[in-house]
Image (cartoon, rainbow, N blue to C red; front, top):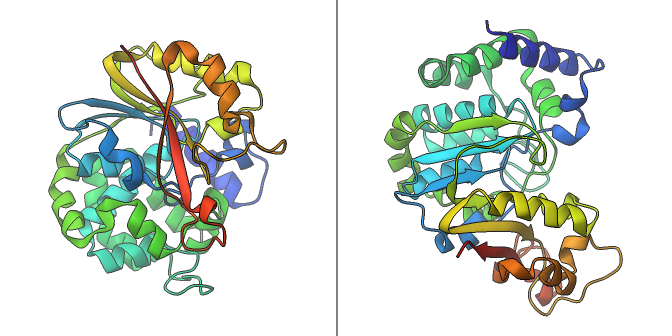
Length: 312
């Protein structure tokens, strides 16, 4: 077992035992089981086939949706060291299981019905069906999950390594085109042969040498507490774009061009100021059906947006 895997596995075991772990495995770095963005709402704005992509997103859904659109040169950057292992677990599950078993294995909150959680999540019998394919895809990921499943009850792993932010099936099906049955089945072969690259680190501190046609920064923006950090992040990521490359600066929830900024909002939502500090990049807003489309009383809250710029 290599040193990185041994360290990550040891920290995961400590965490599942409710013991102190290193800072980079802290509360902020729990993985998302599935995306909480409407990826289908923005994905077609980006040329992905025969183009490269750098993305963040610990759920792996950004990667899987990009592969579904025939993107094969993908790098996943995330501060959570378990992201790689979860991506390969999810990919092996798609390859090995039918779509209903996939949901049973990985869905938890509000599944199979709203207000009823799935206590068969991470079912060990289903893991045994996934294990051989997982070993073929990435042996480190197999070792990581196989060891955890041998030591802990499945629900314990889910509670300690994953956050509780999980959308309902109606939302997830809309957000993720790969959850369409035809796409899901077509993905099985693609996931066997397309191998993403992984970078574990802080977006501000990690040196990235490759340049990309597309970069997705997901919802990092709302976690940045001042405009200097927004500018610093955009400057760095813009420098990594190829000519005519597209940068998704931030996913913005419940926001369109007419949304009024309120003092309690994160700075990234103050579009007037953000446009000013990023004026050299000519940012634009792309709006589409929002995450909260099925549970909001306010029509203005039914739209989400992405803040986007292109390298000229």
